[in-house]
Length: 192
Image (cartoon, rainbow, N blue to C red):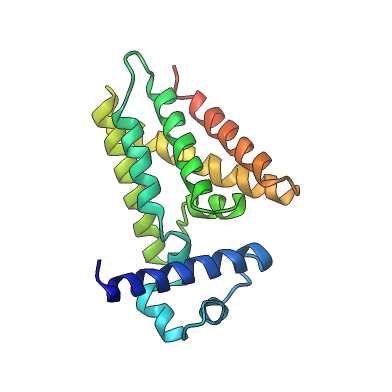
């Protein structure tokens, strides 16, 4: 990697790290792009060189997380039911989010399906749904509609459980445990 590419990568990571700190300290909604840029010691214009919207920082590493889920689904064990497989994929994606330094609150935000948000967020959600659902269809003998429904149920359960558990003041570890339980509860209805 060239010096210029390494510098660009460091700047992008500085923006992601600054945003994460600010989201933790004051919440996602209260944090502005200007604050993120200032915390990363770059201009607002530089922020927009790397990200189109504030939400893009939240989803910065989402493709890596989805890659983890797709790999898990592709490694289906003999006799493993689709529900078990998808739950295992979400466990690994949540663990990956944690290792990337996302707190439980940001995990909840990053897994949200922002249907009422701007088009870019919807496009990202569609991409996540599509990739995970396509992997599930490929690995298991289920139809596309069922696969999409399962993935959407799991995403909704993870983001909803994270929001409620955080609202109750639970620790990050407790929030992540609740998201895993909620994911399994949401998928249980598909296990018939």
